[in-house]
Image 1 (tube, rainbow, N blue to C red):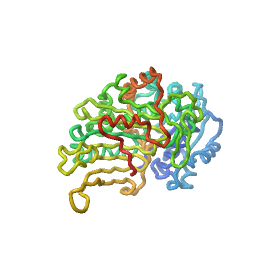
Image 2 (cartoon, rainbow, N blue to C red):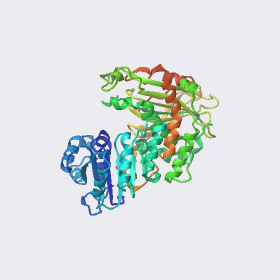
Image 3 (cartoon, rainbow, N blue to C red):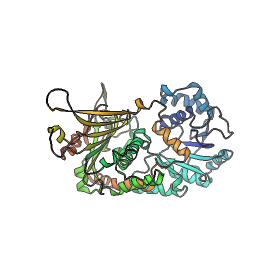
Image 4 (tube, one colour):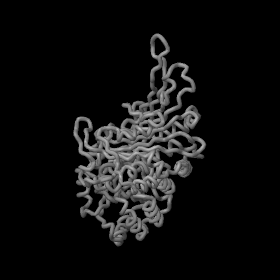
Length: 495
């Protein structure tokens, strides 16, 4: 179905890393498949949306199109590349240099946008330090009316800075105009998690403390900081991954069935989970949170440097590149079920997955295999290959009653052969269509910051730095010891 049109997509930070790697390739994929309207019409006649790219660099539209040729097309996968569609896509893009520090320039932007009808979308692919001046500039030029604004993470570096940004943005835009993007919520497997739970009668009765032993959520990366050491020094794994991606996934796994699939009904239930997280104190952080930083090692057959040897990283850095922690939810459904969260850079494999470990049988009638937690488990893989795998025990052929682990697979790319959206493509289309369900509401975000605040405070008072782990491994040994205390271990497997 074509997107309701017309609209103008205003991309701030149009020459930045996020724009070239994610935003523009996602817009091209949607354009190529006709989801941005008819790609045959590139005029301003109201039949096709337009993109206005904004950055400080002085150039015209033709020069920006050449920049896209040199920097963006390499991030578009060969299987979706189409030379003709690319040329037509570039024709929908205009460019405007703008100094965000000069409020008067927003009046020029308003004049540029005045002839264009329909909704305006302002995508802030910039650092968070620019969010406030951009919003104030848009409000001064009355561009905050009939518009939507998209905010990228990190939204602040702690609860206070997040509240300050939200206050400033909220002074210019209503909450229903604000789209705080978390690209993990746009992944197909996350959507299928909702379908699994709320669209199938067989799973909901199994989704409770009486039957689930533990839940693991892992987001692991093989890459390091990719030349962005100065940025990562101001962020770290706790802010970059735990406060947003991991806690959002936890909320979706643990939420109650919403009254409907309307945006606020879904987000109300996620908020209840975040507010039910057991508060952390110093003793809990010391026992249940592991902080790590990668040293030198090997990824595949290639040697890689330690984090402190990366460009832009000081040798004395105490910034964490790995976090593992145990969380507990104090409510009726989940009391007593540990949630183990783990994320890190330079780990053994690039993988994002949710593992639901079911309780063992109450009596080992068919042998000790049935008495092990996780013999029955559901593995929901978000990347790199989106799938669901249900493990159970079956009799091994032959004499005797010997049980062996087997699994039932659903590989989405094998079952569904049509066009598959990536996360950014789906989320950008949701912004254009005005769908808020996959975006983070302010109270959700601040509840997540409030929960991680004791971890930040404890670390800031400690003289001990993060524990070292070799690149290419699965983090410091303390992360394995965290689960061993409960007689379990991280699930690490090749799909």
